[in-house]
Image (cartoon, rainbow, N blue to C red):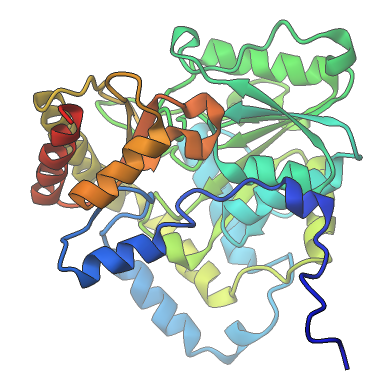
Length: 395
């Protein structure tokens, strides 16, 4: 038997190096406030209160009744899913991809992004990571033993990572460059000239350009984000991650894909072979349906987010915040008036006004001075949240 007072079992240094994950500590406070009768308005997570397409739900239901759908998917997945992804990528971006060598189904883009450094980084090698940014970039690099080089996303740089100025001893160690445009959390978009420079940077440094394209379809006012794979030569150095989560309101379904050069796809496939057996086949079948109805279904869903964006911008501006109207994503990136820290502001927002927002510092120190709100609630609640948070400015 083990002694009763043996203490905590030792954690690895990689685990110790992980930061706290955003919003992970809100559950207890939220539960206590609800018990006290406070109406919580949750603008924290990017998880909309909207339904997936009914056709997709029906497709999942039908697929679940087929016995073969309950067998292992492995990394090959459903051939029809791979082929429909290739068809969608060609129609949407004009990119021609081999469905069996240049596409890989994922359990949501997050897991592929997190596992990727295991294929390309040795201990101590460098990954260029946006700050603030999606924490799976940072976590994946740390758990692979890599060295994250956090680059602040600054308003004066249009929230783009500067691609010049790296010292030679750093440049020689760079293995991954993470980009995410349209960007979470800043809502910035990248011009094609910048994406071209990013491809050239990775060609020069012999590094992998990791393009997280989760918000490729949540864009407004006629703006259509492009794919990194549209750029000549990009396929050899780039992997682009796509997700059903935001596009089709399917966050809990955990389905996505990555596209890029066959050699890069093969490397990630090998890592995944040792760690998972791929998405549930029935969900892949539902994904086929989602991609097929994209053109007729997506405009209405985007219109809802655009309307929510307009209401949110108007409401938060009215109560005293300085808000830039985003061209894409499902967020607003809002400067905090005065000099209050983002953690303090978010804590007051929840405890005093019952509104959950994501503090900018929760996504990295580069996000200090901002908070993020998600366009995930109906207009009535968004207006109420703005009024509540407006009261914090004068306190």
